[in-house]
Length: 495
Image (cartoon, rainbow, N blue to C red; front, side, top):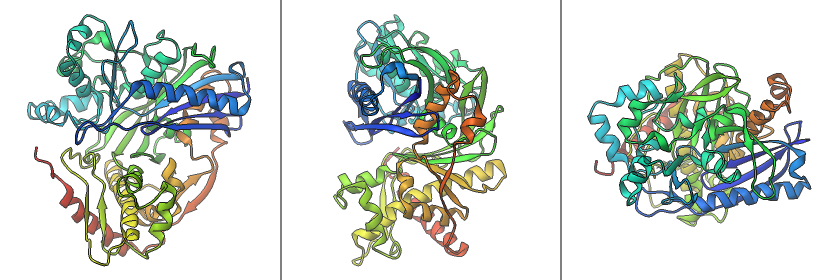
């Protein structure tokens, strides 16, 4: 058994990567799937498309490498978090589309909960803020809006799951209804200190306990696949995508941090085995659980990161492929006074404004496509800088460097802009698919494929370091103007 298979189910695509013992990708397969927008601020996925695309790319990756299931020591599963599915336990048929983490339909429900004084009690148990981002209010919305769903759920006929749970169900023909603590900690229903579903939270969000999956370790063999073409492969690693990326970057000691540039941007810092509350709008979350030991992370989440480049491509038609954005942005020497706030799904940490919307300010007759492209990249980097400022305020420690991963980190201009705004080196590893690699490491360590963290830590290598080039005074000026642009986008939609 010479390989580990990682399934990386993301917001816009499903990916499968086969890794060898050196932590190198042997084969990769990827498939995009539809984004469904029923109304403004609503985002859905077809659960069948999620499952089929993920199963297809898993089989494709094995076929590309000429590898049989018997050659795979284990499977690691990582997933877009918070996205919420509810399905019939007997038939396996979902009661409606998945409600995606970006969806804002439950913002008013969160407002009511905050007004009723639930903010701090929820934060103390979950480490989260009351926001439509998380799964709890999404589950309640489904039960209240799909005819008969609440009655069926209370009778034990319906199952809830985030995407990891849905895929484990699909991979095992409905035999496994499981999740791990990293995903459970994103639901608003899980007490992160006790490591258990919480009855008071279930009552608050009106979610029947009978719907919930069993919580198993992030690095633990939980069952074997029975899906055609994957038969017998052990599922031994499960983690939410950002926690998996933290592990894949080998940020396994307190204080180490990474930022993932995917559909959104996610900055995580390892806290070790003691959770610490944020005072600056960040989240405390479970990083992973291995060998019965739970580790935690401080997290800042940007809802729209690389997705703004997709919008330039699909919404405005300024580029034909996402890879073209760097050349277009380099066609101008600076942003020409243009700032793009990509608050298409509201603002996440540290602002938490569900009613913010996207804005482009500073347009003149001299503004061209290059300025808008550059402003889009800067909009990603400004949001990450906001997160890092909040993280340093919480910890009191200045970050020495930022490890980066995700598709958009391959954009050299974006990484240089990021380093300039942060004033610290940005470090890109040789393997940038660290989300999938983290899932592979969790699974491989669980079954003894790798001997321990010393072996996996030795595999992490730097591909390039981006050093700050911009004068500190100019970086401050740009960030001040960004804050002004941010003010124009905030509270745009009426509450």
